[in-house]
Image (cartoon, rainbow, N blue to C red; front, side, top):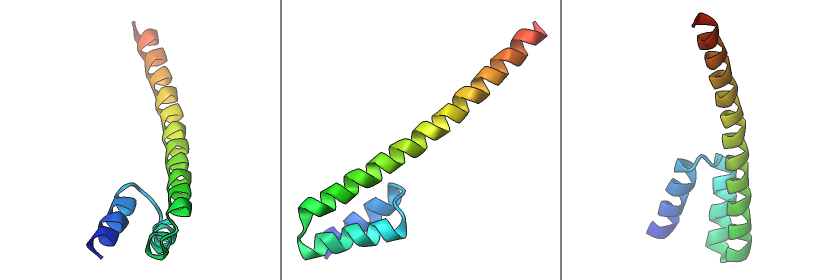
Length: 73
C-alpha cells in the first residue's frame, strides 16, 4: 500500500489531475502496468505541451522587454 501512496503523491506532485491520478492508480492496483505506463506517458506529453505554451509566452515577454530596452537606449 505504501508504494501506491507514493505513486499517488508523485502523480499529484507532477501536476496530474485528480482524475488522471485516480485512473493511473486504479491501473496500478489492477496490475495493468502496460496501460498504466501508457497513461503516464500521455500525462507527460500533456505536461510538456503546457510547458511549451508557457515558454512561448516567456519568449514573447522577453521580446517585448528587449524591444522596450532598445527604444530607451
